[in-house]
Length: 259
Image 1 (cartoon, rainbow, N blue to C red):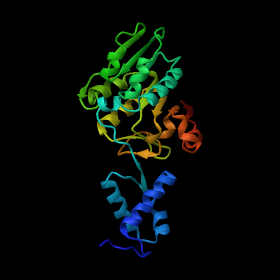
Image 2 (image 1 turned 135 degrees about the horizontal axis):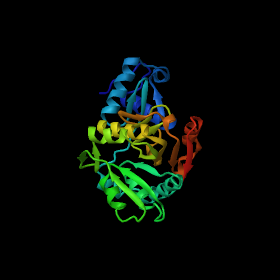
Image 3 (image 1 turned 60 degrees about the horizontal axis):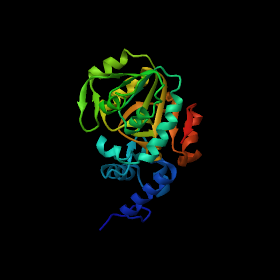
């Protein structure tokens, strides 16, 4: 038999109410849930811990966000959402027209960016992604620099101190980040600590920071911070995201481009 809280809700009903609020508002605040559900702070904390254990929320200070979507391996991600990634990549390429030195991290959307750089586009691309480097190998005008380090075979990127040290010596015109999770208050986050360090170094090394995010990665959170949302200069998002999701980034001074 399930426990009932002081307002008569079963535990399962209360947790379903929390998930409904999260879907509606894009986040839940623990103090507000205490009032709305008529239960103690301890009860809400237990609920959020259990929902996080099930992968249904990402706990943050004072509440929770939607969890970042599970991506899987690079090979698996490359086969999903291709049409959306192509549209986003084409929009991102337009933002790189004047960039001479570009950092591309190892996302599958950035692979599409690399494939769509015009053949008369002369620039230097630095990447920690062997698949992206390979995609640019036959480009007639792009100089390709592969950032060294330990190869993560699952995500097909190089990580570690060697990669970070190299990036710290770069002054790029732009970096393009594939996004695991993005929230206007919690920033850009990822579920891999080493990857967070590399992405953070790329952000610090670039004049413009371009984030590319499918709608399911907006208003989501993960464990490790890459950058505050205000550190982005551009966000490339799907037009289907709508102003309700995108206006908070505009309010932070981020230029939003939809595709």
